[in-house]
Length: 128
Image (cartoon, rainbow, N blue to C red; front, top):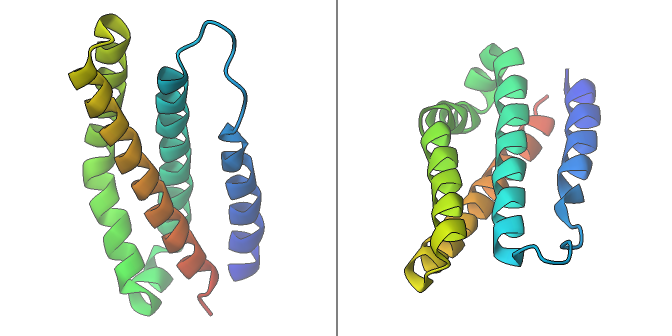
């Protein structure tokens, strides 16, 4: 199990890091960054949820904190992603400073979530 998780997670996390691309001329860098952060968070969560689900019984016993994190993220992640998408659209429409600040905060939250997910995937890799 662990060997497969390492291969899959390593490849997936490498692909997730591909979000560092240049911004096309005329594009708003903040909107591009928001879209990247949202997609990376979604992809990370999807990977984590699938891995945890596939090995749930072992994870519950050996790493209950990882299981708890997966369950919590399953509850809250859809709302966070929806909120980030709405804030992106709102900022695109208004370009106002309050919308900008809210979007920057949403990006920060998504990046923190992605780090938490990466940490939990790493913990799953350590299972024996």
